[in-house]
Image (cartoon, rainbow, N blue to C red; front, side, top):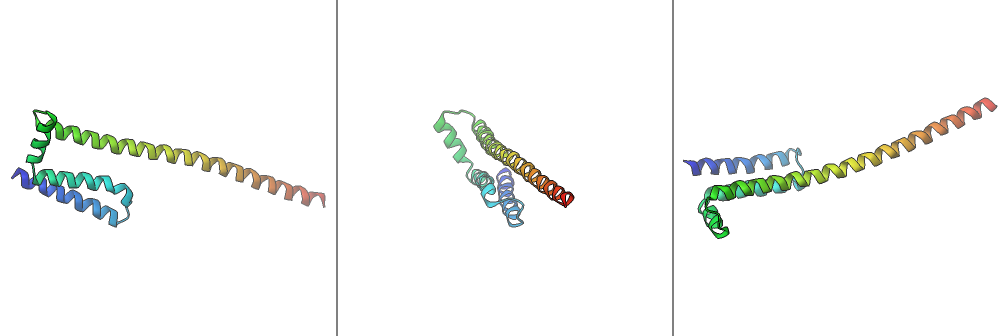
Length: 121
């Protein structure tokens, strides 16, 4: 029963991510790691002995600890990736604000020169 439940969750996760990508709510580039996680979840649900084998290979006596550690590392990777992206977007936003301020200043100077030229005539 547990295995079927987790297989269903893995399949639903894969279908959900692909559905979100198809509706253009998440770019393919961003969805890659979510698909990797969903496929890993599905594979671990289908072959649960893999987790036991891998944890014994690493010397971990309680396999669910390895699973939780893998999930934490995966989420930290996603968070770090998103933090880098946010930092990049903040930098771009600052540059755009500066360019906008320069353009507004140039437009204001242009209007002022036109206004001054009209009053000289």
